[in-house]
Length: 127
Image (tube, rainbow, N blue to C red; front, top):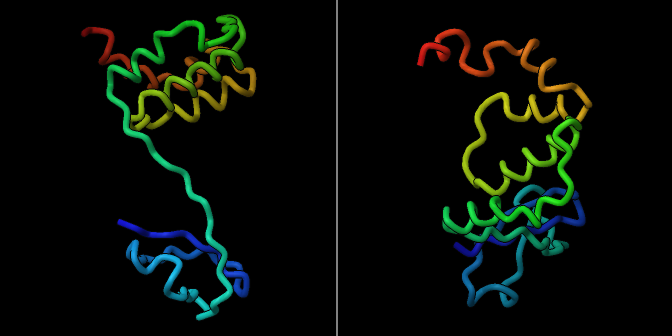
């Protein structure tokens, strides 16, 4: 659907306005908060749908990883963030906390000690 993002220069709010392709640029737009007409169009990000095969190929390309130091928590955090972005799926709860701790320099062993339920707890060991 052709929704366009604008910033109102009067009240500084961001507004999303539906306009048909024929109306875009021809019909005046109004701020839904203050009614002002002094809006500036914002450029929004574009999502590109990629196949699972394309995402996995990107992850498998070791040249795109740069230097990964397995003994450096910050390096591991960068790798994990990249994998999370490439997978394009919902990230499980706790992922961001683990990566944030790695970025802060905490070792994987410390994180595991502080978050014992992270790996599924004792129930997962018998599987």
